[in-house]
Amino acid sequence: MWDPSHSFCKTSMSSLTNKRILLGVTGGIAAYKSAELIRRLQDRGADVRVVMTRAATEFITPLTLQALSGHPVHQDLLNAETESVMGHIELARWADLILIAPASANFIARLAQGHGDDLLTTLCLASESPIAVAPAMNQAMWANEATQENVAALASKHVRIFGPDEGLQACGEVGAGRLLDVDGIVLLTEKVFPSHLLDGKKVVITAGPTREAIDPVRYISNNSSGKQGYALAEAAIEAGAQVVLISGPTGLPAPDRSRRVDVVSADEMFDAVMKEVGDADIFIGVAAVADYKPVHREEQKIKKGDAPSNQVLRIDLIENPDIISGVGHLAGRPYTVGFAAETQNVVEYARKKLTKKNLDMVVANDVSDTSIGFNSDDNRITVLWADREVELPKLSKRNVATRIIELIAQGLREAGRS
Ligand code: CTP
Image (cartoon, rainbow, N blue to C red):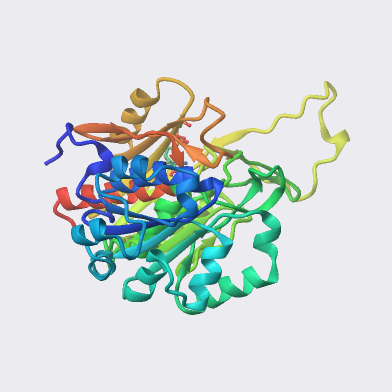
């Protein structure tokens, strides 16, 4: 049963629960971000041990990382003290994943060459577990052919490359080479360990806006980017689901391993959903469906002179079908999850939608806050069920999606439908 005293981040659902992550920190200004990374990995349930190169200790102290990880920080290959706590071969075997963040150009070169002249490279050589590197360096160093060859060599040996990001660098230059943000590294780390939360489930998701034609060249629509729906599709795929993404016009690429059905209007979306939802286990309505459409679609383009004499052109609108309510009221419906974009009384209005549309779960967000919602990359949500609710912190849309999928899997289990 739901235990509200549980911090959301520490539910047993996390794909990093009990995972042993050996975090390698190499020299570079981004080394200070490893402190935050340790915390975020622990929040997701991981046990983190740290290895630092000598250069890394110039940027952040081993004591800081020892305090955060709760374990001695390993630095030297032949240090009697740390070897007696856990020898380097034992440490290599202990790790479910070796994550090097930040990874300097020099470290990447040495790893690509198979060096074993310090503790971190030796551990990488001795471990049979997956290895991931999150590069962080000056943009010219990243673009350098030698670095690119080294990265390609690592990728060909199945070393995962997390990032780098683009943007303003510590040296004042702009370009690719920045350490990926901590949220992004955590998400990619989770993807190393597939969650299997929705293995074999069919998930139908609507995303994006709809367009309601006024005439052959004009339409009524809204600002939905489709990003949240697409991110949910990706998170569901990562969790092992078969995903059908029914999408309004967005310009976003279809996620790999999904089946996308392109639609334009709410009526088309309704038909596509009803065709797919019969054998679905889960339906997630993320689309910003236009509530109204013109009663008549003009056959020809409306001309300026077409307005009556007072120059007021009226377009009569009629309600569109409510797609998710249609699914919610089907006999034998799938686990049905709606979104509620509100500008006021967020939780109260979301709860009304839960009841009226007969949903299992509603994800509510406040679209009056421009730093989240519609065209932003971040989102802050509250998730509601008939008997409870949980508020999540502000997260990237990718991370929000992963959390929502975990909560859906949990809801499905509690409803005895998993
Ligand atoms: N929805 C739908 N079909 C519609 C309208 C909305 O499937 N015709 C779904 C959305 O995909 C979302 C949920 O209903 O999952 C809530 O959408 P929202 O626009 O917030 O609510 P509305 O029902 O349109 O109510 P209002 O606009 O009055 O807030």
